[in-house]
Length: 134
Image 1: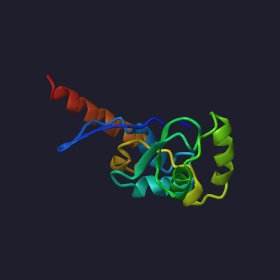
Image 2: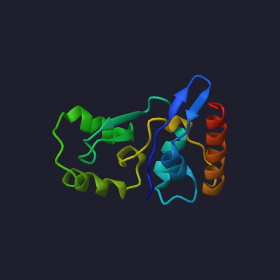
Image 3: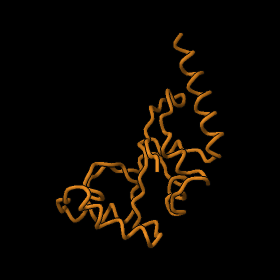
Image 4: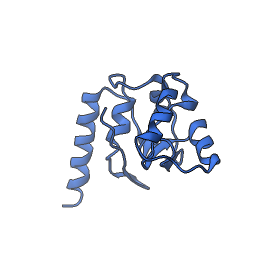
C-alpha cells in the first residue's frame, strides 16, 4: 500500500497539498481496514503522534488506545521489524483503538473521493498554487 503523507497548511488553505497518502487511504478503493478509513475521515488537527513505539521506526499515527498505552508504558521499542511484529496481530481485530492508524501530519485535510478524482483535484490545485508564484 502506498502511504506518503504530509502537507503545508496555511491560514488561507494549503500552500501545497502533499497529503496524498492519507487522501488515497481514505477513499473506498483503498485496501485499508474500515476502522482506518473511518479514523482518517474523523481526524482533526493535532490528532496524530510521531512515535517509534508501534513499529520500531518513527512514523505518524492517529492517536488511539494503542498509541496511548505504548507511550504511557515508557518502554523502549525493539528495532524494526521486531517491534512491528508485536503490534501487527492487533490489526486483525479491526478495532480502531488497537489498529496502527498511519496518517500524515495534515490528516485533517483528508478528502474522501474516488482516487482518479483526487489525483486530478490535487494536480489542478498544485498547478493553481504554482501559477500564483509566477
